Length: 400
Image (cartoon, rainbow, N blue to C red; front, side, top):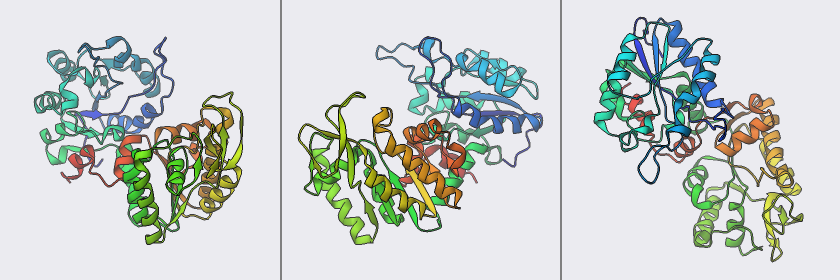
């Protein structure tokens, strides 16, 4: 951010889409808010005023009304004020006379938070008129919301065109997200290992395809592993399988073989007779799961094999859990992989963790500081690694 903020109003798109307690509206995880603080403080220290824009949840109800009670950004103000060590002003609207008056009255060193951008239907439609109204509020536009960079919304992408090229930039968080992702995509130190988990192959087809072109080792965990096992002719009991993706799974396995990529599936699984925390469970080979049983975590043999590959890697990307880690009996695989990545990182590897469940696991284990970088943007990071252009990134980069 090589910009002069002195005497200027910086309009900063942040990602304050944080989880709230349903009863009290207290913030239950402030990671995304804390991630934006360095950018806000930098602008204030540079003599500028800060106007913050964000969305929170999905406020538009099916009947067209707005769920103001549960999705107002007013819930964020007390905690943000504490983090910044100063009072944060709040505007009940995102654009219009009140927002313009409050923005115009801001003095250097002051912070104003606008109401939820998604209260206006034009936000998600990428409405140019709304974006132009938003742009009136500031002299400089800063996008620090990587978590929404894959959306071509009014406040994340469309707005940038209404600022001169030398008056728009990434914030520190956005800059770090893009730079760290490019460490994996650009010229990574090898071996490069990608670890992909989650429930469905269909959610990860694009990233699996892209990774096969990039990596030395591809580790697959989570429920989507059983689609691959069934595609190979294995018995997977009542494990989650996408029957309509078996051909794609076979094609991906063949592509990996043709490219010389080591494609690792879990040799054994922790299987259960029910999808429940109190289910009966045992270990079994992943391709020999009895009828009536389902795979809910990777087994010890898989943990050992995967950990060895991870600890011998120099660059590591992790997106998605190895099992149903919310249930204690099926959390071991995800925890073991997190610890293996932490070990590799301590040995000098570069590790990037992204995706809500992977980040949650790392945070639960207090291992975030043991990873090279923990991304704040699940969907955005996934699309970045799929090779898609992120509108929020392109709007700034194209100006450079």
